[in-house]
Length: 162
Image (cartoon, rainbow, N blue to C red; front, side, top):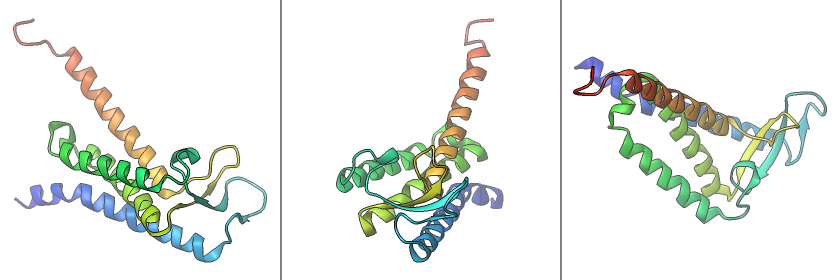
């Protein structure tokens, strides 16, 4: 019984932990840097405070309502799919927790400010934040698991076959 209870906590702990780290890093950036300011001035990577009013890569600029509704729909879909076989592994639950925590972290910014605090800057790539990174890593984990399941099921003989 205790193991199942702990098993059920993997997703909320991953999502909550990521959400806390994301919000703390964004708070630090907002209180330590001026918008557009970079530290160090040169070099990679650097911290550059950007107020991103769009979605990923600056798309849908100033469409806060549409972005908030989209994120809310994704969050609801993730909760609905949480109970299916695909999410039976701890790794899938961690991946889903990262996606959910990242989506909620950016959603909180959009609701509070109308924009998202971005700050990780590699110059040659759009500036991003911890939540964006977690979403990407979480999606990579989920795609890996889906591909692994497809490969295993593709190699397993179907009923009536040998």
